[in-house]
Length: 162
Image (cartoon, rainbow, N blue to C red):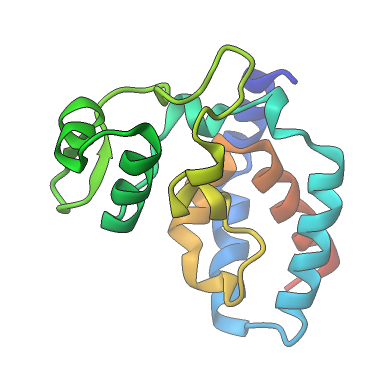
């Protein structure tokens, strides 16, 4: 997968995607959730995240207190030690990674804490959630980061023209 080529295509279509997502928010088509779920499944049957892992290399998830407790326990660390070692609190008072790429990503793009990974990682790229129209800003960012999100939004534009 040529990430640079993909990223440039995504950047070139930014305005088109933004307009579509805004219309989607206003119109809220009846079959949106159903159509989106089908497209999500279709795209992820053809895209293997292990070939990319761009999300893990370029962005970090938000860590909830539950995430911190679960991961700390898994790593046999105190929560405070885990935080000191891996996280910092940003300007929005969210716990995020100190360094990228994610320190739990190995050199073959496998997650070393996959079974206990943060909720935000489990749900990424959020393209199979109900009321998808509520996360336009996040989707716009994810289109640039995630080839699957780019494909899903393009497919959605074709299947549900507005």
